[in-house]
Length: 289
Image (cartoon, one colour):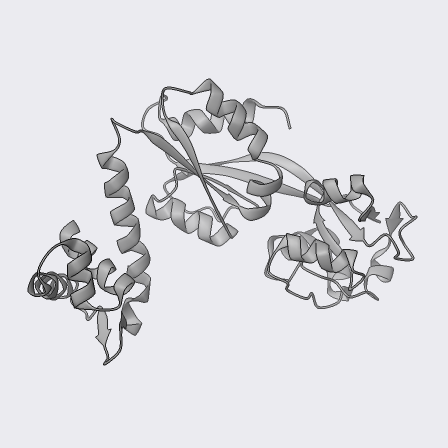
């Protein structure tokens, strides 16, 4: 696939028009139009819808934009391979924020001079899709979907805790039962999330007794809402450790089987032992949690 054509396509989407894309790329507007026509002919579909105000992806081409951007990023990384080598580590937000930083620092010092480590964060699905397209070299996620062509290894098991505000009636307790939790507003842990899946697997039929979860979009928002007394939540213990230590939240165990979430590290199947992604993964697995 011609990268100049792909670059023209992305530039049109980013700038909203062919004239602005041409200015950004330093070529004529006719050249941009020609690149787009040839790319559409090669793919056999229209890629851009033109209106009087802005160019947008054609409905059937939305998925291609993700691959187009990944192709350009990979080409830029390939061009820097010998002058500025890097390893891109993608992490689900909770892992990247609350668990990964000390390990990144330690491994980065050990590999200084060989390559630099760059981090990206997103949802579990986003990180795994970026691993698939090559935008990240190593992925750290809260679940693994067994996609072919990759190696995945359990990294660590992290306990989950029930968190409540300091003024909540449970604040002085060590644990709480499922029946009691069912009577509260549950923030986070939606059925389709990693936590929701874990609850269904661990608690079985009891999981159906828990209330429908309220999606607040991030663990930080969930913790703030719990602290304000708007509900309770189930989170990774590490995600609430600072607030619990400071007294802003209380952490309780959920009665019954221990709730522990397996975190995964994955990378493309290595062709050689010295592959940087495989070496990073082994270094991470060697660090005690």
